[in-house]
Image 1 (cartoon, rainbow, N blue to C red):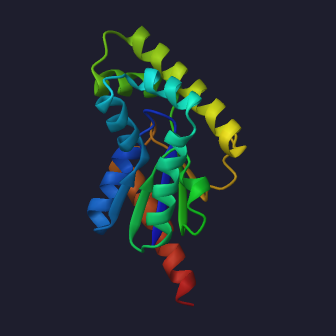
Image 2 (cartoon, one colour):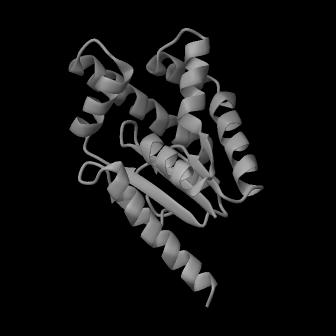
Amino acid sequence: MRITVSGLPGSGTTSLARHLAATHHYTLISAGEVFRQMAKEKNLDIAEFATIAEQNPSIDKEIDARQREIAEGQDDIIVEGRLSGWCVRNADLKIWIQASMECRVERIFSRDTLEDMETALSLTREREASEARRYKEYYSIKIDDLSPYHIVLNSEKFGVEDLSSLVDTALRCITEKRNV
């Protein structure tokens, strides 16, 4: 089974992907973690590194190509990343996680231990705008086009265990249809 988990920053994609990988014993590939690690290696925050990525398409393209290559050649894998639903063409289940800007900024503020909520909001807006420009320019993808996704889940309304239960139901449906 190949599953993609996508969503905007702070929506809970990494939490859900980790949970699913652990409960199903699947391999996990996370584009966000790779991007954050690359920024950290260069002593840059996410927004600064995103600005560099706008000038250097090879950064995004390298992350996306690695994910696609690994995911499309392997079973029992969770691929987490903003574009994974677009890039992993043979995924069995493509999930988009959504939450309000306020909820996502609160999570980012807590996770990234930023100075204050205004800084978290500003950095989140900058990052999202940068990513939207890059995805449009590099791939002709509008990040708000959810057409490749099989299900859209709200992480503001449901916790990771609840979301996992919903995904498990979808996986059972897929498996049952294959076995008919």
